[in-house]
Length: 300
Image 1 (cartoon, rainbow, N blue to C red):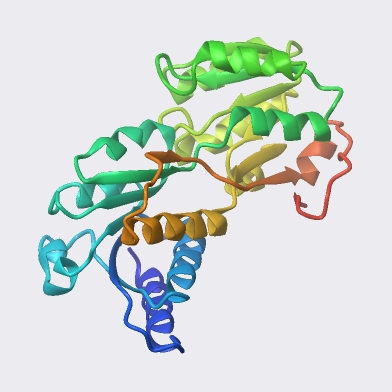
Image 2: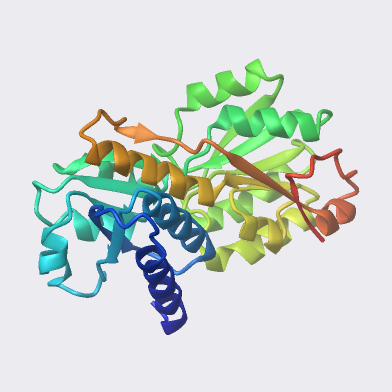
């Protein structure tokens, strides 16, 4: 990670430790973080604030430090928390007697939640039903969808189709093995669907493939439903993604239940979902901006 990110982490950790007003002794929670992306920073900051209210303190386990998880401080941690899949892989190699909470992971990393010490995983996968419900409210006349998925990955095909039909959509599932297949799909879908729905997938939508995919979207007049704010800023017409700060609070609540020796869910999903629209792309594609609430992010 770059120095700027570690400065951010150090500042937040220091704030949690020194601003504790009650003075009560809390637990030390070991945390590993996979990424310096803003989403992780938002989640981590909210997580630490939520734990700090009860006097718990957080210390960072560096991913590139082989001895980090066996340090004296780490040994005192009654629970460790992995933010992201790389962090989960790192902490899965630690003491199996220490409970592990994994958060901020996508569906293709769910196997990480099956490690022996894993007690709960907080996923970034937003419910398709919630996405389609919000999409229907924003664009009620656009009912033909194509969803791009890899073979044998992502949500159940039958479940996706059933959910779409229940909400009044006609859904076509397009299987793609690579980003190259995604580009080819846009040419075949022109004029046949109202939206191309991209589910989170690091194979189909690596960072380098996003610009040509979105250019194909514009050229073929096929608005894209993205899965992050960055995707919408890059040129997707609309996007749905978790409220990352609330994911941090949700993770802190799970940790508190572990500390209190209460039952936890093996899998939890985002409680709050944000929506963004790209105003410029809507105009290019001849789409009217929907009537939106103040909670929707409008990217101009």
